[in-house]
Image (cartoon, rainbow, N blue to C red; front, side):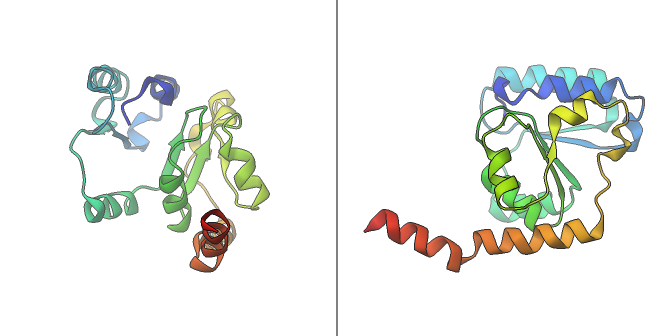
Length: 165
């Protein structure tokens, strides 16, 4: 979303300094949130990443969004607060590599559930962003199974039953 707490500038500048810009496409959802901030990010993204920066400013319906995320290989979430759990779970279920900040409250949640995610803070310290897209097939399959179990009706129903009763 177009929210300054997502720390999008940090990610854009990191990849801009790498020299590998043409190797990647940078999709940035800016269809909701602070539209002045969205314009600032669009300007920065185009200045730093050039043609590789692909902002999405149009709201996508559920089917369009599902098709859209299925084409993306890596999700990088750089906010410090809990946000985007549905997106994160969707990407994991699709076998995608997911980065979230180690200081985000969701990070230990995924560790506790033994789902392999990657730390955005480690990425930002790294000089080699070639590791961004690589994820081995064993990790992919393991993440899919564990995410499916986590979001299954058999897992969710007892939790809601406790809340409702």
